[in-house]
Image 1 (tube, rainbow, N blue to C red):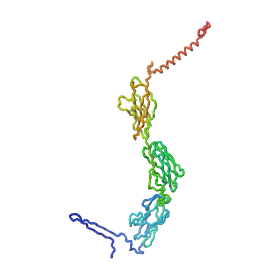
Image 2: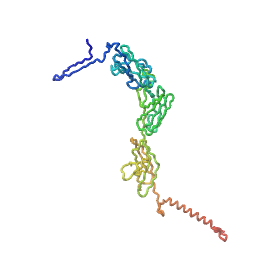
Image 3: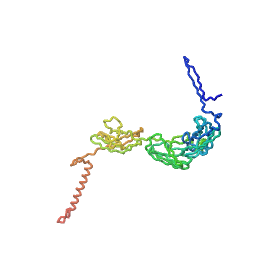
Length: 439
């Protein structure tokens, strides 16, 4: 009986009303003969290791990841029997690799022998592993290949912020616990993206503690709180997540004593409360009322972390007749009476009419930021007084009544002093009378 190297079969399947047919074709081909061997011992050659590599390229230490180790074996007679790798440099033993689609092997019979490995210990850098390949005739070949182990860096397994909600400028306290097989050298809060700085934490009884002030430039809402952790080998990790399931003993029994589970990861974040614009009350404003209407500019300092979107004033009795609105827009653009643009001083023009009664009147100020947060109304007292009367001087200058009275008083005092001095300095008469006319 001969050996079939290939088989082709065609199955005709009828279909349709017109007796049409469809062909189903099957082809099979023998790639290699495993048994019985058709190669004699004299013609047999030993297998060779082409390369040893990780399918993922790298693997993390301290049980940080599982890698797929692949040994590419070349054998002219295609009769490789076993392939083993010595994992003692990683804390393991002799492990068999397969080319049967098992344990990470992607393709059967492609001469890539595979197994899954992990690094439970503290090894880092390039590590050499020995591979041994044996064929069916007992010929053995040993080869060596390197794999790269990456230092995983510290991991956080406990974290809290107290309080985790507050406005810009609030002080928050951080407590964190971190682990690394090489030791944790430092933990810092990174606020540089929010125009803050690096805030170092201090280790006390195994807990990294510290506090920080929420930067003014942080956007309101839920914001990530990134940390930078550095281990004893200088490996730094930038992260905003912590390992919520922490030291899982059942997983450490599988992945090694340094393993920190990453099955449950939680984001480290804080909630920034938006605050309304801050209005600085300028105090009581005194305004003079004349015989005719006049315009007076009211200036108020208003600020907000996110920028003032709208500032407005309810002028009450000082509202211009030409306006139908209760609230008047305030300006910080150098127009409508504003002295300097973008200086944080918002201005509004008030109309002072002669019909407004003397006394104290109320003006209300309100503002909102770019997120729509509206401030409470701020009440400003405006004291309306009579305008002082004026006199025209000789040279056309304007003298107020108070100034004129002051000048007259000083003039009277000066005249009196001159008279007294003149009387005292007059000489006595020749008839013996003194300066006052008495003997």
